Structure formats: structure tokens, C-alpha cells
Length: 290
Ligand code: NAP
Image (cartoon, rainbow, N blue to C red; front, top):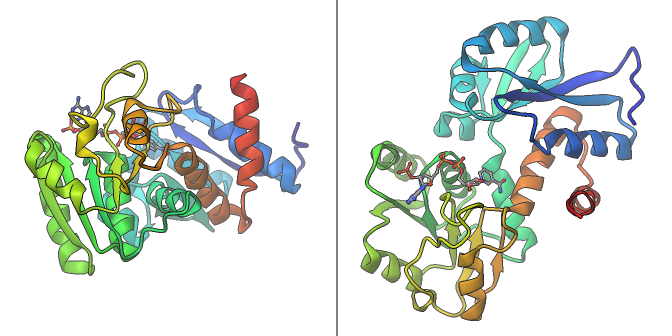
């Protein structure tokens, strides 16, 4: 248990629903392990209450907080300052309160880049086929482009999300050295061709996420050339159908668990200046699942 004192600094999570989140466990365990006088709480806040909640948090002098559904885009409008990645994403999942100035960041993309590097696949200079153009995919796309990936080919079904992604792809091509292209996820030929010349396939759609565990974003395993690295940002189930197919082709595959841990670790670093003991937290998560 964390000892609350008169000096304890408050951090937390705003969103709705939040009761299921593992973030309080992650951050409180890390504070405890490092002996930091901080606490992390979850607050169920809906969009109409966000502005009032921000005024209150500012008045109370909290150190910072995370934002989850449905508040990430609204927070990008209300933050006083935005990091380059948060500005490009139009979404904020982490706020640092610097003496009443709310600085907005997005850490999902950094979390993914660090998770890939940890799996032995640093991504700068590499070519990615990215499935999905929603919130998490956008964070990966933006961070990948900012971090010097050579090319990212985004595949999404034709939808309002696809139309939104067109503007971002053009912006990233203009502002970074990364070549970003957008394709229809239902164009199996284009997807197959892209996979032949990619270093990594990243699934950032919901396809394959529990309870829909028999779904897979690719038609069959013959689309995966041996040597392609396959990553799924889904972490429930731990091994998706896509990952199973990849392994059957001799491809290396990793899931979204370390992305989840490293996005939290990046928020933690922004608030405390310290590195989260990620491996200890990972063990604790396994223990909780048993
Ligand atoms: P989101 O903003 O709702 O985006 C979902 C994406 O999946 C969109 O591109 C959507 O396309 C696509 N999609 C959904 N169902 C589809 C279907 N049946 N066929 C084709 N495309 C489909 O959600 P998100 O927040 O980005 O989350 C996406 C996934 O990433 C979830 O499984 C989530 O658990 C996981 N995630 C993991 C982490 C982590 O730390 N590991 C972090 C965030 C999210 P349309 O918009 O066109 O429907």
C-alpha cells in the first residue's frame, strides 16, 4: 500500500468507463517500487464534464493525468500546449501540469516504437504495412514518421476514418522524410504486394480482439512472406489468430502487451522524470491473470 502524506502528488486517469483499467495498478506499483510519493486514481469523467474536471485538477495542482475514451480528441482542443505528435494525431493521452500550464502528449506511438525495439526490431529506416487508421494506428503512424521510418503503407476499409487519414498522410509526407500511402484494406492484391516488400506488418485494427478471436485481418497465411515481422497491438488474447498464422509461416510475431506497458512508462517518465520498472510491472500483470 502507498503511504499517503501531505506531500503526495496526484496523478490519474480520466475517461468513461475507467474502472476496468490496469493503469492504476501499473503506476501505483511503479511509484511504490521506486519509493515515489505519488498516487494514481481513476476518475469516471464524460465529455460534458471534461472542462470542469480540468479546472478542478488545475486548481488542486495535480502533477498530471492520462486520458482514455472518449476524451482524447477533446483534450487536444483544451490543452494549453501540444507535443508535435499530439498535434499531428489530434489526440492527447497524457497531460503534464506545469504550474497551471497543461501540456498534452500522446504516448501510444512511442510505446509501440519501444516495444518493437525491445522485440529486436528497431523501426527507423524500415518499411511498415499498417492495418487500421483509428486512434492507435494514427499514433503509430505519426511516431513512426517522426522517428524516421522509411515508408508506412496504411490499409483501412473505405470509411470516414479512411477519408480522415488522407489528410494526415499528405501532412506527414510534407513534414517528414517518411513516405506515407493509404490503401483500401479490402484490396487484397495491393495488401499482398505490400507485404512482399515490407519489414513489418502491424495490425492496429480491432480484428482478432476478444471476443472475436477467430477473426484475422488477412485472408490467409500465404500472404505472409517468411522473414516478415508480424505484430499485433491487441493484447487480449495474448496470441491472436494473425500471430498464429505468422508463426506457422516461420515469421516472428509479438503482441501489444509491451506497447501497453511502454505507453504507460512514457507517461510515468513525463510526470516523475524516472523510468518505470517495466519488467516488474509485466510480472505483476501475469500474476494478476492467474
Ligand atoms: P479505433 O480508434 O476505434 O480504431 C479501430 C480501427 O480498426 C479503425 O481503423 C477501424 O476502421 C478498424 N476496424 C475495426 N473493425 C474493423 C473491421 N471489422 N474491419 C475492418 N476494419 C476494422 O480503436 P483504437 O483505439 O485504435 O484500437 C484499435 C485496437 O488497438 C484495439 O484492439 C485496441 O485494444 C488496441 N490498442 C492497443 C493498445 C496497446 O497499448 N497495445 C493501445 C490502444 C489500442 P473504421 O474506422 O473504418 O471502422
